[in-house]
Length: 307
Image 1: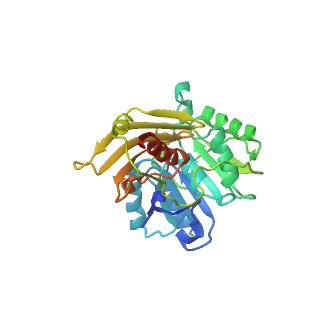
Image 2 (image 1 turned 90 degrees about the vertical axis):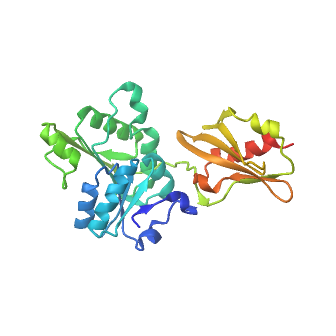
Image 3 (image 1 turned 120 degrees about the vertical axis):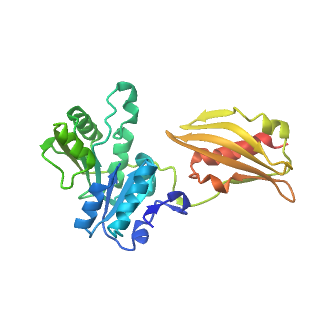
């Protein structure tokens, strides 16, 4: 009821007006944690639709309990990487605000790639935020991190960025804000407002399609030798990790890891016997996004094992 599984949806970007049943503006919080901020925001401002994006399954489970207890029907949860979700699930000029409260700054230089705000993500934000009022609101207890994010927004060229300001408290306190207050830390606010947009490339677009290939015969020696296969090109990587066989030899599951521009997925490709020939397709249980690397994996397996 409160959580969307985008892998079950058959068209991208998602049609949020149909999901919510209205055309209210969208506000997104990335990394909602305990959900205190988003719940209180939705209760006080019920003329908006809210989406919380989180990578923690535990946080999503606890948040759904809060939504049920507060009888809120204007919030949806997505369990997904935020960079991928915002780029793929939202159309251009569709988001009113993106809110980020106390993200991990990943202070070590070797972890810099894990930071949320990088060049590509800011390009994405310039595309999906509303043309006139679209904003990014960042609150952090780390001043150098706020300064680094500000510089990245300025370098992007599509945002007007206000000076970093010190704030006493947010409109609604999160558990992290309470923790930082107890430790005596300062809090900093950064607001970046969209002024223009950049064109971005999406991995998912249009109608859902299930990649598949048909071949007449299978070379079973080649099939078994695929374990360890790796191919990398044009921001895509495909690795075959293992192969599982049905006892009667009528079906095989090929375990695949693939990467599209940094987004990693694990899934199975099914090789199954038909009345005439063999069908190679993405296994239904996989629940993988049909990205270019996933489609290419199916095509590669079919080509490699055809006798």
